[in-house]
Length: 329
Ligand SMILES: [Zn+2]
Ligand SMILES: [Zn+2]
Ligand SMILES: [Zn+2]
Ligand SMILES: [Zn+2]
Image (cartoon, rainbow, N blue to C red; front, side, top):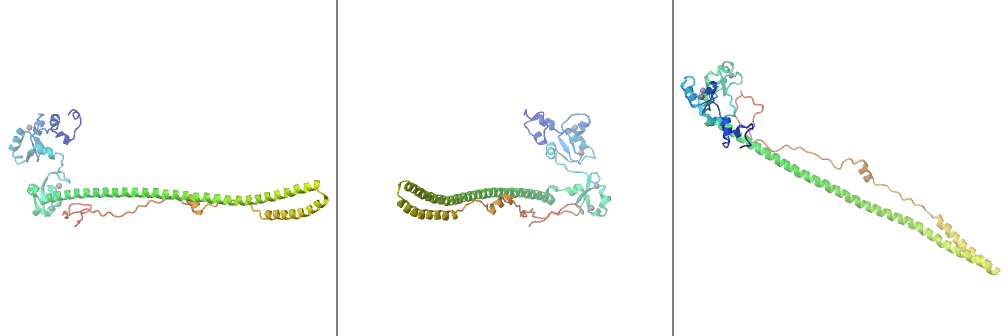
């Protein structure tokens, strides 16, 4: 209770029976007593005068001829409808609505009559008469039905929007997953291609260098042979007789000649290799031309949701409605 005191409280909290303080603060004062600067709580409310009355003042009000048939309601009942503003005056003329035109189906004031309802005189009745049994009228039932129906429609539309939001959420998750899978596939594919390319590079390198090595080996072998001939020739020159040197020179000439021929042949077929790389067009295009991973598209489809109305609300032509209700069977 202490938390509530000192606050500005809305009407609903004011009716909270836990707080006497609030009840006191929210009570309706008696109008006539207040006029005499007397503070007194009203017990009844005159709906004709829109004023609160204490028991004494109510009696006095009823005693007067002018207000004898005014309608009183309990102050508690008044509190229930206090915040529901019912316009009792003509919006156009500001005077009290006193009559009802059955032709135009609208309440009118004294000024309305000559202005717009001159030809309706047969259809004009006192407002009180038109209002008889208003609580059991089909208009009220229709209004209640329309209100409930509209609330039902709003609830359904909100539910429909919630379902649509949920559906979008699912779509978003699905697309995120697809982006992630696509990305992973690209990564895997690039990894595969890179592995294959490095493999190719290594094979090519090996093949080229092995060709170089083959020739080097051949040259080394020939060199060894020639060195052996050189050694033998030098030895024979130093220690052998002329006949041996003569025969050896003849034989070695043939051998050297053959080796020189072999070297010439080998050298004539020497090739130099250059390893180069040509990046696939698809890959350069990915880096240069592909400027987005994918495009997010939105398609718009009219909702299947419709405002459902069991029957058409009959409205007089005098009432201005921007858009008429449409019946949905
Ligand atoms: Zn009073
Ligand atoms: Zn009154
Ligand atoms: Zn009027
Ligand atoms: Zn009229």
